[in-house]
Image (tube, rainbow over all chains, first blue to last red; front, side, top):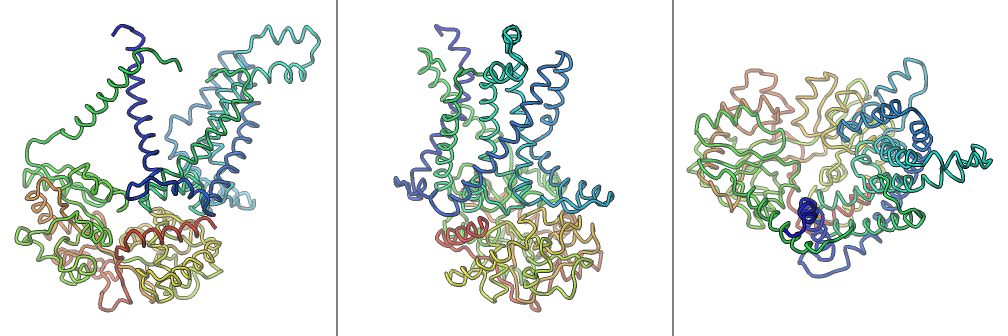
Length: 271
Length: 355
């Protein structure tokens, strides 16, 4: 090896070749062939079927709602954490990361137990003579699951962007006569946008593609595009259509990322 | 990302390493006598496997699958050479049709005489002449209901369309089991390929959807035990277990008929240890082994000799575990419908799920 830097990048290349590039090539191969391995666009075109387009639209809608709720919850939280003393903020970040030490599936399953008809929440509510909560097996439960699972991915990048703001910039704004609202609107918020963009990407992409959350909390009654693809692979045993729809979904994700990147003037990578 | 000069070389090295790792995995542990078994998850008593190893000295490499559909492509591609597999009826038919199985030499499996002939007869539906498969477990699909939550007798699939059970019904989240319900209710064959009959079934499922609490598979068991729903469509093998946990539960095969399913041992064409596979199947057919296994998994055994050894008379004569096939309503096994049939059922099921 002439160049030591190349040697260091070797593990990454092995990783990406084996687990990103080769699988991606296979998805494209399956996506553009039929069962007899002839070239076709039919798998891609199958997105226009009523059921598939409906599933895609519901997925986009739920992912948008979940992302929006995550922003509304995460932004003030990130500001509080970033504003507190270093020791406290470390602890608060720890608290938000703590649930991630447990498996994602188990946590989602726990929500099922909490929300069920005779679940923990309803048992407590009925003890207090309050009306029962019946959101399990509805889109509301799916959004709740998405927000719960992906919220840390919104908090962390916003927090990272906020602590990187030079306090002198804020002080300068104050010196020049800006009040708190103006400081926030014209200084803090614009500087935190790159973190916000990362957060939006990291929440909306898994929310758009999930099938586990909709299966567990939606009772199998709401078909998201992730469920459609899962069904093509696991039940219909049709890897070609499954791959074709995956490619379409990838295009939508790229589109979403491109749109957000357009507003990301800084282009910084804060996470 | 910045890409250096050495990138081309790096990619080559990466590809070679990946290839090395992959081939390395495939070649591990080929010394000594072994048998590679591919079975459903939680579908055997682990002690039975270790007993087999001590008795015969043959090491068991044990792999599990979740559904027939996940198992099939692995066997078809030949990526891993299994010696014994335990698929279900319609999948066995598909594997026979696609020339993936080898005929079993009956003279090497003397214990097969323990298997009740009536199950061999049922097997002829998907394995004519009983050439390729030996029944391991069998059962029916029916309604599990909670006595305290229903009114009137439950004996027909029609209760699953009864408005009073809105949000209290659990349906199976798998295409064949879901369509079986309206098809049998209306007196059709559960293997029908008739477009009109299937569309009628689809419309019934769509009509039923607002009443359904959830479409689930294994969770029917836990939800029924936890009093989450009044009615659930379930495999008979889970009935004994759920009743033990919640005595209010009852299992019934609706009068209009239902599905009878059989999971059987088969030996694939590319098996590397055929003699060991025969020994394994023969061992599983031994009465004491089948009994021990039945007590652990509670799925009905077709092993007549094992059933006679069951000490608990309630279970030995249980109408749920061992219904009298001659008295039973119209029970049908699933047949392989071909790629076209699979596609048609899946398409209609997707229409139901997306409503």
